[in-house]
Image (cartoon, rainbow, N blue to C red):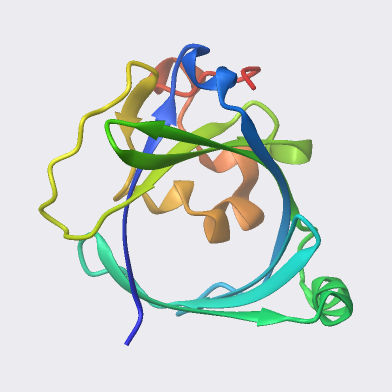
Length: 164
């Protein structure tokens, strides 16, 4: 069974912006509860991903490549417009961090994720990492697509709107 072990953080400052690798991503959700079914187009390739509910940091994740034309058609089936974001990939202390700078209705939200090998893995945080939001469901993309920025805490609670 495929699993995902991931931690998620808000981003502060601009230190992450020097990342040389940037990917454009559009993703929509056909379903968000109880499991999410995501369609993603990234760099001209497409995937469908099914994610289960969280048990701590660990959850089931199944991801499959699909034809680009199929993904474009599936995105039109999604009840909400796709999330659009730029993904910056940054190596820090031997680990790959993915920093997503959201666009459109979510502009100003910048979130970093790191995938782990074990739930108890110790990581070194970059200086641009802010508050951890791993366990805050409001920061899941499947929640953001429904609630947008209105569903998040006020900017003085750790979200730096207008960044990115």
